[in-house]
Structure formats: structure tokens, C-alpha cells
Length: 263
Image (cartoon, rainbow, N blue to C red; front, side, top):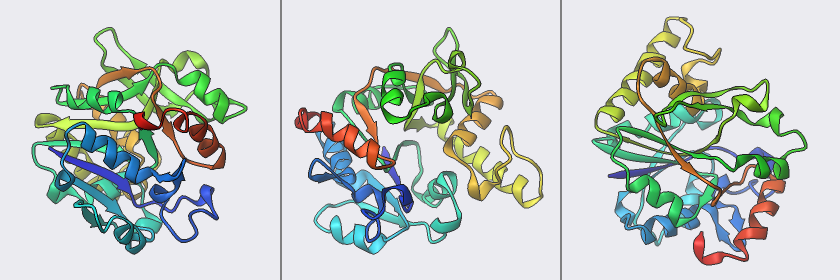
């Protein structure tokens, strides 16, 4: 198994904290996001040498920060003009039979990661059923920021990442942590390749106006759903935080400071 942390972005909404370091290095209660992720992974049995970080912005600072940790790096040289899917595919040579993908700006408890490591589904995505209270803390209007997520009776996603018109379209919320194994991984890579071909030929993608280089991960996940792939929902009730701006950081620190050993 390979764990891929996507950490190429600039984190502009956290400036000036990110003026001289990547977003994943922002400290939460005194420890960087990336160190918290690595520590949780190790406590769950993931070896340092199985962790790959896709870096970009201030990558040399990140490499120095983790110089004592036996992780590997993959560089997205075009981080300024690309997005998540492009960053992920920079690491395609490291994708074999089984990968866990983690956004570089989230922290989570061991229990959340263990849920990912314990499944055998070809494709699975962590979603938070208790998202609404958290989004109320993060935003004056949760509907303006949250995206659709619908799950069928078998626990398989039927929609993700679309603009929500009402709360009824949001059964849970995607957190940026997922796993793809064997046929699931094959489908993921094949669809990304198809997106690249379509964009090169000026053919629209699935449910987005974005082109391949600008694709969000949810665009790719929705494409998988529309192509017939089964994305299984791994349902949680909190136990994670996204650090996208200063308010997010303050919210996370209120909890992490009290429950340091969980994150």
C-alpha cells in the first residue's frame, strides 16, 4: 500500500503564515499538519517509507522540514496552474495495486484512518455525517460552501461535489481522504487519462466546465460514479478538521489542544 499526501498548493487564504512555507506545514497547536498526518499514519501501522508527498509550492522548505523523516517526494512543477487531479497524477508511477489519498490540509484521528485501512472495497471515500454543525462554525452560510453528496441504500455514492441548492442534497460531506485498490485504482487512473485526452481535444468533461489541468478531485470522483464505478462511503461522525483559512485553524486548535493524543 502507498499513501499519497497531496500538498502542492500555496494556501493563499492562510497568508501570511504560508508566505514562506506550504500549507501542510502550518502548525495546529504547535505541530504541523503534515507531521500530524504522518504521526497518525505511523500509529496506524503505515511505514514512513510507504508515504509519498506530492509537493509544489515551497517544496524545498517542506523537504527540509521533513529531513529526519523517511518519506519520499514527488514534485508538481506546475502547481501554480494546476489542481488536485493533476497533482495526483504526478505520482502515477507510484500507484500500483493499493493507494490511500489524503489532502494535505486536513488532520484526522486514528479512528478515521483505521476505517480507511480496514476496508477491502475497490474504491472508498470518507464522508462525515455530522458535517452540518462543523460547517456552521466555519461559515455564516453553510450552504454557500458545502457541496452535494448523496448515498444510496447500499452505501454507495451517487453524487458528489456539485453545487447544493438545499440541505436536502447533502447527506454527508466529503473530507478529502480515500482509498483505491486494484480495479478501483485502475478505473481511477483510466478516467484521469480520459479526462486529459478530452481536454486536449476540447471535449467537455463530465459534470464540470473545468479542464483536466484544473480538475478538482470531486470532479474525478463524480466522473467515476457516472461511468458506473461503485464508490463506497466510509461514514464517520467528526474526528477531523480542514485547515483552509484562519477561522478553520482557530476551530481546530480549540479541539486539538484538548485532545492532543488523538491527532
